[in-house]
Length: 389
Image 1: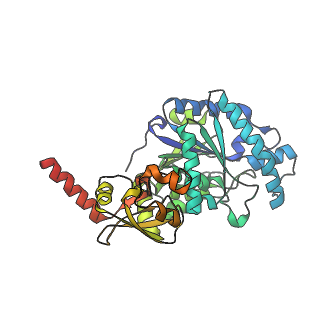
Image 2: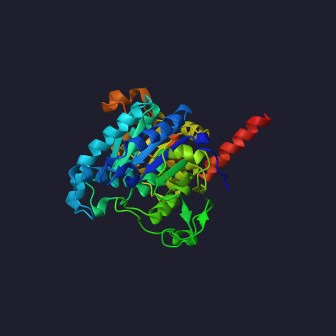
Image 3: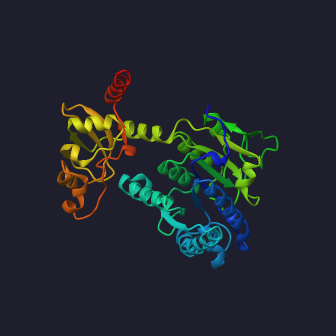
């Protein structure tokens, strides 16, 4: 089992923050807490770590600003509160992060943005570009348009989807509880704290309770659900209390928290998902040169494509077939079928002139591709032969 390591040794961290941590029902935004959290984030970024924040609080902040009554809100009231709260929340994050010379970028997602492949790729590309330029994406569900039928329902699961989408290696869920117990501690004083969870078993799932606050949609059950999404994709997860100032520093200094071990690596898990769970929407037939390049770990460029079949859209799964008609790889295509046909066999430098827009250099990027066993074994044999030559 992979062992727990300090936060500073991770490459990309997604931090989920619950509403009750950010917003006081009567006083509104907890500015001092937010400033301390942003100082923690600044310290992580100073170590070269990419940081993403999934921030609850828009509805809670909006209902505070609008002085809506306590208790459950009607759908239209929640959407109105979110519309007001999202503006205030984004401004608060931007101001607090600016104290560390960090730029914030707001991303509002709906369920379809991570479930539909084309929108998934667009969202991922935007987030990755923000990280590339050193910004901190502040992500939330778009509660102004989401309904119960088309929503995540909580930011724990949204954070897990963001973690898998961006290839994060750690997800930190901060809430009003410091970790996983054998039973809800507010109901059972004899509940035992669990520091390390090597695998999410049915017994672990049975330990989950419900939400503990009117400001929260999720409880421990949604955190366990998030853990299943994250860990199966190779991302470790921590559940910790955010009630104290500087909760990330507190974790580093030994504060109680529960750590969930990842089951693999983000790349391996994602590629396994591409290979085994999606049906190809079309085929790209490639030449021998492309076969060799793919075996060496390269992306598939348009120049190596000799034929395109099927009706697919950008982000769909396609099979990559060699000259003999055997599938050698499977991946997420960067172009619609019509555009793929137009640029097949052409150099990447010609794409803009042909299509009228720059597009992407690769027809299928290596990060979005999984090789079949046959081509992988052939490549390994070639490497061994070259090493002994």
